[in-house]
Image (cartoon, rainbow, N blue to C red; front, side, top):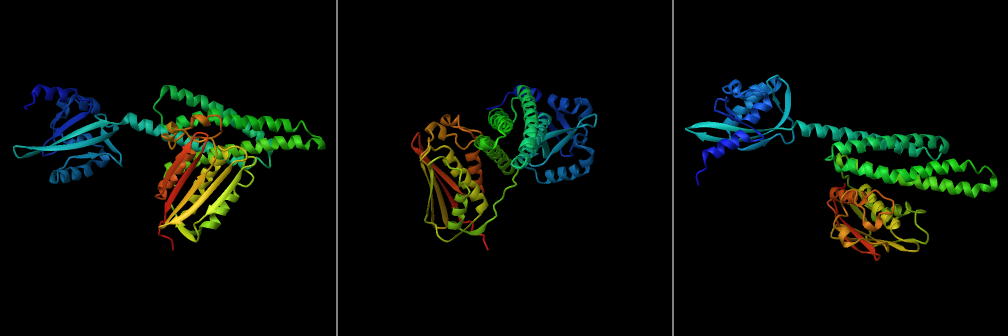
Length: 413
């Protein structure tokens, strides 16, 4: 079916992208209104000029070579992915662009069509997001350093945390204002604002109040009261540290700073060391049981596997009640290590299981239990680094079984 030429003209004239047609000599033959507005030229000014007129001066010479190469080997392509491209306006200012190229032959002459998109707004948003992420990372690192000194300097640390809380609340207000003006910010920023609102406030308030109350019990006979408040401070600091560890792990994963480094390790010794880390963290009457059928050595990154187990066992302890059993089962078959964590906790509904590995997701029955909603998302990311898999079985109030499988990486010396 023949296309009505008026439709093609309307498409050319009303397209929101810049459309530029050049001939075999690299000179501009046509440019639509969007392209004229983008580069600040009228059609009369730019038609007949070399396409390099719209290219930054610093890359003009290289562009001529690239253009000649394209004319020798023409093919449809999208340019700009993986590197930054810029155009040059009439006033010599530069603008970031993405360019798609097409071509056709007419009467033996090659014509090239360039579709140009001005991505200035997107680049500005990306720059803002990177700045926000860097700022949040700096704040997280500062909080972690302060928490490490809390045990030895409770009173001094209380003052610092009070100042940090005030700064955090100021930052929260600034972030909330920014969210009202720019609602399409990344999920990380939105998640951090929510976490700062709900998870940071409670432990910091507990630390401040307990630190203040300790001074009210100076008598030797009031040691039990002092120990009660010291325990509350330690528990709150541990909670804050877990939050910061989640954020730092997610940030490192996003930046590609965590890579697998395989090594041979004894599975039995490794599992016992991990379980020892939970000594004293169980709820009253809870039992941690280990069933290890994986004898001998295994080749993988035990640091990453440890982080996965720490997260899964920590969740099992947190979401299970008093006097419950938590079982860790290890087995080895066909150069694949399988680790299962089984609990008798609150379980996960079928509806929630569909979203369980997305960042900042909390199950409906876990809303009142402390946590960031990042743990299982981070576990999934760690498993991807080791080419591992995860399966989950759970029923509400019937407990949960999470099984991770790790193929041998086979590159250990």
